[in-house]
Image (cartoon, rainbow, N blue to C red):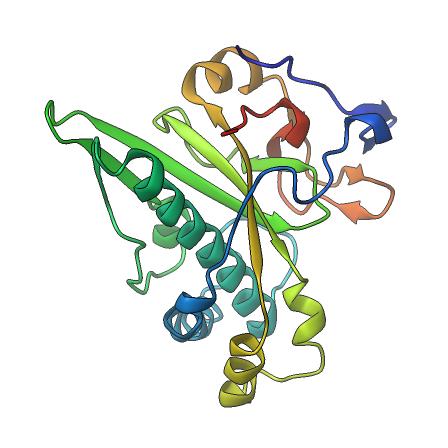
Length: 239
């Protein structure tokens, strides 16, 4: 049964989620991706360098440094690796699941790519899956309105602990080997919070649950781009 999609509380252009509706880290299924750190780091490093040459491809008002791009890409790949493990555990006997994509993309092409395709082994029917990965304290699934989400059969939300920003604080992107060694020594936990299905997105979220560019959420964060949103508590759980 689909949960009620809760709306954020609002005052002017400031939004927040009631404390009772927040989902603590660890309630969803946890996965380790420590065995994939080296591959995902090498990809993320090269992708960050490439994207730094294509600023503002996602219409963001914020100029992102190479370090920020590296952190974002590492987080994204960790979430994808967790979903890949989960999908093979749960649905591997029914579907052929495309592997995590480690091709280097250029600008907008990277932003619009698909994360996974599940192909039914008997019927050949395809299901499109997207993954959004955030920090462990986040309670929102955000989806840029500039992108198309109608084609996704499911959009998963993953959370990461500890904060990559903290463990890599003060390390320059030029220190490639130092960054890799810190990551290899860290025990990351990836939580699969839940997912949003296509029907719910089209009927309950699209053109309704929107945070405008410039809106303030949780008192401090300014939205750099316009996004659809769904609170974590409103997502379907895998448990």
